[in-house]
Length: 167
Image 1 (tube, rainbow, N blue to C red):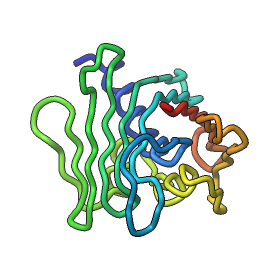
Image 2: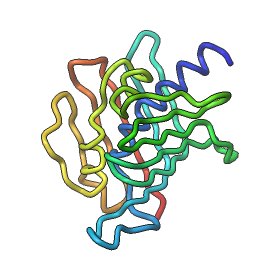
Image 3: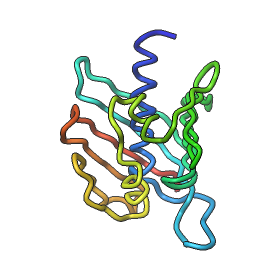
Image 4: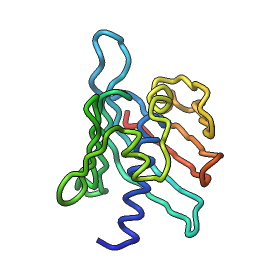
């Protein structure tokens, strides 16, 4: 696997987590108790203004919430690029080869991106709420059309996340 591919995959995984809450519109399963969406599908793109600039886009499938869930990324041909799973017992990243295990979702995002990402806020964004999230700005104005954008403005390297949900 080339260094550029690994770098792009890490970027995707990192912001896959961001995507988790980015702007997804529910497509299937619903939590019968809470009435909130628990499954989102769509396409996400992520651009990190690092040197060199890193950009990635992929189809995704997100299920669950900030406590227990899974996030998969797919190529345009439908091949699974990566799968993240998390729960009360820790988190796991599966790409090629053996899965990597982490003590928590925060540890997984720190490993893949170098920083802990606001997973709880991401799920709230997907539900249409924008809680205060230090370092992030989210635009939910087009969420009803299945579109969400978020920007990391500080203290990390600036990044732009765009999500288009399947309808």
